[in-house]
Amino acid sequence: MILKQLGLLVFFLISQSKAECNNSLDCSLNGDCVQGVCACDYAWIGAACNKMDILPMNKNSGYHNHTAGASWGGIPIYVDGKWHLFVSQMVNNCSLDYYGTNSEIIRAESDSPGGPFVYAETAVPVFAHNPTVCITNDGTFLLYMIGNGVSLEEPVNCSKNANRKKIQTRLSPKKHRKRSVSGSSDIHIAYSSSVYGPWNILSVSFTNPYASTIFDCAWTNPSPVVFENDSVLMAFTAGYCHGGVEAIGIAEAPHWKGPYVIKTLEPIFPKPSFCLSEQQYEDPFLWQSSRGFHILLHGMCPTGVFNSKYAYSLDGIRWTVSPIDPYIYIVLYEDGSEGVFVRCERPQLLFNHEGQAIYLFTGVKPLLGHEYTIARPLV
Image (tube, rainbow, N blue to C red; front, top):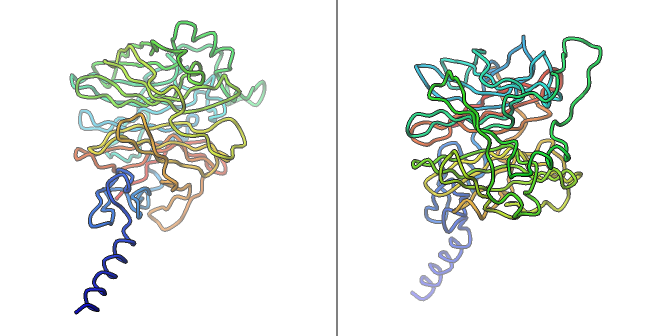
């Protein structure tokens, strides 16, 4: 009898030692801890629910406009029986290298959430970049973006071989400092009562722009969660004027029109131990679930190549970065072939009415040719 009891005790201790979780935090807030094992939500797999479950994709999915310039990520919304994708596109047949002078935001349409999407119209002309679209409770359409539709420089004509100047970045440290004197940023919101526009544009200003020694300049790459009462939690990138730093911060506002307050005075993610540049993280995509908040982003350390990141938080302020890359740069196609991209960035998720992520949208750069936007189905 005693031996039997000891055996049961040993079995219990062994089973407990193999437990992979104690709560949903151990499941990266993407699942429930059930008897010591993570039961992952739709679209997530792995012992800690921190890897995306991606299906093979159609080669024509997403947005790939062969007759125009490069495109660089976005997510669609469903209105009037169609899916409407808002995405950055480079005018004059240019690549992403020229985004600083040539990026506009276009609206493309499709009968399917994954595309293929077809160009419909320009929503915000040059300069406008990196849009995230959402709808408020009263039906107002919002485009959080970089730029305001006003061009500071002549767009480059990439159809001609002569007199082309490669623009790595539009926003130099001097421009950042000059444009942020009153707390205004290069983050703007285009808003309209219709998905077809016309669009009004307002600037996002911070009430405490200099409270942080890092987040006091170069505010870009906005990603909002707009709550039912129209208040906002927004992730953003800032700090480029400090030797090229790119770090992620969090701001909030009582209404999407503002005013916005920077809530994190230090980067929400610790600087990785080894980086080839001061750039750390960029392209945050923020969303909320029943368990907390989540961010997909592009990691820059040790380099920005083959580097995706996922992080999670109970309150949107204190974050944990997963050690596992949520997605890879190798894409499987429905015909059984594979594609490898040298860049796979600007991740954004499309959710269904049940709050399940059903598509992963990213901007990608193939080995040859212009960048474009793909949509990978999730399961």
